[in-house]
Length: 227
Image (cartoon, rainbow, N blue to C red):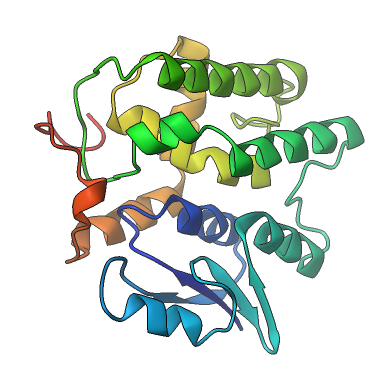
């Protein structure tokens, strides 16, 4: 069976991506949760001989790290499951925006760390964050308008795909920090947040005993993650 090595569900956006993909597509796996900012993190990660961070995918003697590589490995292993969109144009766009997520949006990621246990009031977090948010919404809107709104489902390309898995933590950031979006984008966010896989992830996050101080924003919470 596959093994996915992840960090805290409350905070680890990179861990969420392959986890929610595997869960949503019904691909069996076991997980190894290594809590961040603890003495055990580095030695337990190092034991997998796969870099210095998570997630890590283990399939027998095959070990894969870096989220994009993990997702492509999952796609290679599971022929017949539409991990990426089947249409060539849609698939090219999906891979492009997934890669942009992997390498970009540093201001948003820095100013708005993922925390699926909290909800904060909206605060202007600066021009660079606003630009990142605008770019994300542009990519989502383009995907929905060009490929998603064909009756196949509420996700970026209709049916859930690897692109949605890559952007799921961004959905949680916009929700956590009450960043306003238009109704079309709100509907997309709700589709992600309504996934059974996300509900399972969040429930586990709420039960975690670990707190990572630098991922806890020094602002009062205004209520639960979802209103």
